Every structure is written in structure tokens, then in C-alpha cells.
Length: 240
Image 1 (cartoon, rainbow, N blue to C red):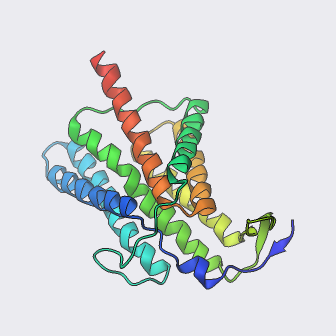
Image 2 (image 1 turned 120 degrees about the horizontal axis):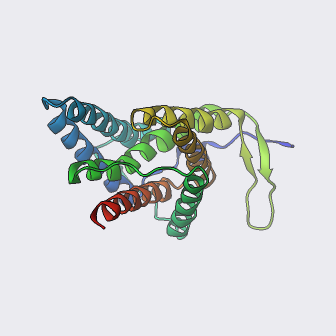
């Protein structure tokens, strides 16, 4: 495999926030933080654990929402100075990501979550944007920034209208490390090793799609929609 040139500064410093992605992430911060604080001081042990996990998701969302700009060398503010324009293929990419993750879950026969009430349903749905902001948007962007000065392996040669696509060893490490931590975090939700493996493989897929397209909004929307489908499926099974 041929070795390509290091990435340029422009590639590293462009914004990853669209208006849709940023405000959905901000809503995730507020929802997860609110539910976390509300349940954290409950007298019920299971509610306390739910509060701790939800509060952690809220911190993931908050850190990812703003640390992405730090990593990319952009000015940090309450909201970005400017937003990345919504890519014309974002929703098509979202569909590709969503179908890929669903296929992975089917292959591993992933069992649906147990959703007991609306609060837990809300926490699960907004965990998607929170996790994408932290595990993909922040962690992989960090490894992209670190690995930008390293030559990478060419995985798509330059052709008519398309730039050469290279991936550095640091970026590969970032995808795998973020997937490992993503799966490890879910050990609190699942006790089945097969399900954890499914989460790990899904993390690799989500990481690769974000690295390839640099379209965090597509990742956020796909993960958000996946969790909505999961919650709706559970409520449907319980109701009918």
C-alpha cells in the first residue's frame, strides 16, 4: 500500500458543527443533565445508577460539543462563530450509517433495551447525539489532529474530481480506541459479551464513517434515529 502525504492545516481546522448537529447536541446536554440530576439523589438504588449514567452521558455531550473546536484550533464560544454548511449528501449518509448499524445488530442478534418509562426513553434517545459528539466528534478528531503530520496509507487514489484519501496509523488507532471505550461504557447497560461485541463493531463502523466523510451531523442523526427506533420497538412490544 502506497504512503501518502500528511494532511494540510485546512483539512484539520474546518468546523464539524452544522446547525442541526450543534443544537441537537445542545438539547442532548440539557436532557441528559436534567435527568441525571433528577435521579441522582433518588432513594432507589437502580434510579441512582440511572442518574449516574445519564449524568455521564450529559458530560460526554458537553465536552464533545465544545472540545471539538479546541482540537480543530477554532475559537470556542457559546455557539460556533460559523457553522459547516449541511452537506447535500448528509441525509443519504445518515441512511447508509443507520442501515449499516442495524445490519450489525441483526448479525449479532442484539437484544433490545428494557425501557420502563418516558424518562429512560428520553435518556436513551439523546444518548446517541451525546456519544457521537464525544466518541466520534472529539476522540477521532483528536487523533486526526495528532496524526496529521504523519504520512498515511493511501486507500483511495486521486482520480477525476476526487482527492487522494489517506489514513494515518494514529487515525486507525483513534477509530479502534474510541470503539473500545464506547463498548466499555456500555457494560453498565449490557451483561452479554455478544451485545458488547456488537457495540464495539458498531463503534468501528460509526468511527470509520465519521473519519471518511467528516460529517458529524450524519452520525448524530443516524445514532439518534437508531435509538428512537429501539425505544419505539420496546414500547410497541410492551403495548401490543
